[in-house]
Image (cartoon, rainbow, N blue to C red):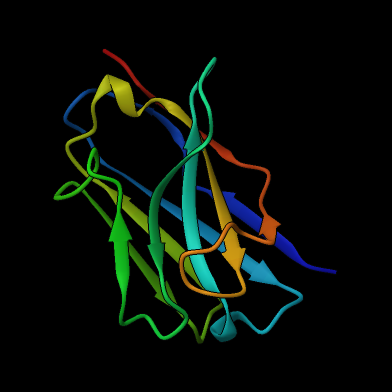
Length: 119
């Protein structure tokens, strides 16, 4: 059974930082591209960042470039999202997803972790 479990969300003030983690079990982690998506209330789910299976390719939404960093530890089946200089518009539920190939919609999803940026 494939499971993706996110953690690290919470309430943070504008300008603050959070580090999200997603632990994956039940699949060959280093064969999958990994993604972080987010969904704010009333909005569609959007891609935030993605990393290829070999960790040598990354892609970011324009809205987070220069502030967020995606990384993965294939030995620990974990993908991270370091979020700096957070803004209120970053408030959303953040989901990790596993894709069979680069630049495709995830086949597997986690249940999400809430990030709220507010003073």
